[in-house]
Amino acid sequence: MRISAKGRYGIASMIELSWMSREGHHVPVAILAENLGISKIYLEQIFSLLKRSGLVASVKGAQGGYHLAKPASEISVYEILKALEQILFEPTESSVDERAPAIESVMQKDVFRPLDATIETLLAKIRLSDLLEDYINQKNQNNFMFYI
Image (cartoon, rainbow, N blue to C red; front, top):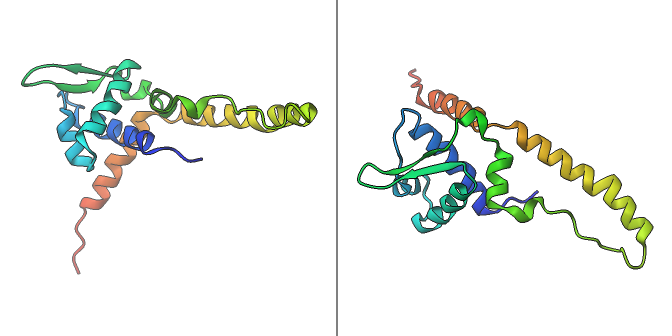
């Protein structure tokens, strides 16, 4: 499966946002963009889609920025990707429907629909809170100093 830069940056920025806003702070897109090495303009487009999908909320003003619209434990990777890459979850187009409808039916029934359902189920099980926990563990492991 090939997830676009928009999807990958969206997941990464949601992890970073959940990390930075865990104490109730609002995080400006500029800070997220700088921390992740992503274009601020591109990240603003991503956050516009995430906001439209109800995954993040924003506050204007000097102390403004973004925060999660609901707890990280209630946000799945499926929701993030669906907000950013609708085409990823559209049904597979017919290939040989006109000339070989029985083959097309078999492919849809036995391959494409089960594949779509499996991917959706897997991504729905992965919570932003799980990713944040793994991120914190990785940060803690990387902070250990080893002396010889």
